[in-house]
Length: 378
Image 1 (cartoon, helix red, strand yellow):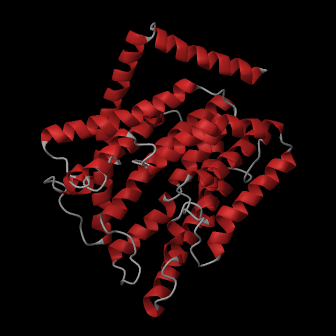
Image 2 (cartoon, helix red, strand yellow):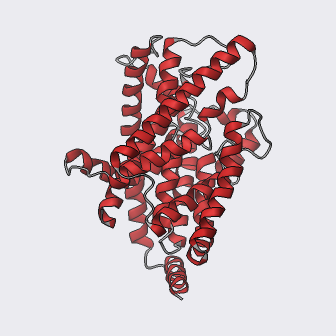
Image 3 (tube, helix red, strand yellow):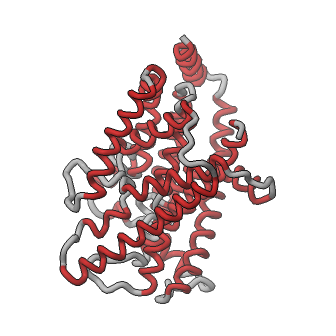
């Protein structure tokens, strides 16, 4: 498959990944997941089953980023754009909600919360955005390493990182102080190097689409099985309080294999050029904005309650099927609303870019991009 086709496929996968993230957050905010030490309901079992397949979303996102960034020139403008998007939501949403009188987070511990809005990266207002932007910053260093290291050197570096961050934690039922559950930059670097290695040597994870799909499906089923087994053991014996939650960690081995399977599926998938595919590609640039808006501190714990208050949606049903239908309605509405807001944000950014494109500051920033591109070629 040629590069452009593969890029188009990954744009669709990026949209799927952000929808999976919305599903994960819906499940966690509606008590639709297994709870350690409590008897599972049908709704929670169904929710855990869905989570077992959606938990790969962030890993897939980083694999896509690493696949393309590993061959891209360093661009200061891209990092500044990501930062601008973060500040657009952290500050503007806060101001709007303060004016509307609906803000709640900042009513207590005002100084610290204000710091989270003014310094969203350092304070981890968004934990994913913090690590993701830092990954962009160090990407040139990683790319140089991939460029000059031999294939064996890269491979064994990746193996070492996987043993340290993934394999040990997946088989040892003890929480380690160095383990951040895959929610941090360390794990993202490991995923980045895996994607860069795949891109550089055109590595085929599996033989094709169907074997990749089987890897994704078996990983999800395996993760669900582990969750159910250790939930039962914990419920009956009181043991494995920590390990019962491990299948939901991004650096759990089955989460990694599931992400690689889904990534490989879209790498070799032949997508029919229909209205759905075209729409997904149009929506792909808004994926990061969807994440930023719904995970704002003033919104992340409230959007499921807001949507449940809509008359035709109603509260979360107690049954499994009702919860799934409710989830589908909420996720679709949330996704559409967030895309609409981020579309407006993109138009504002384009307008600002046109107005200030000839200013000294913008020209200076663009000149840095050109200088860095020249350095890369040398």
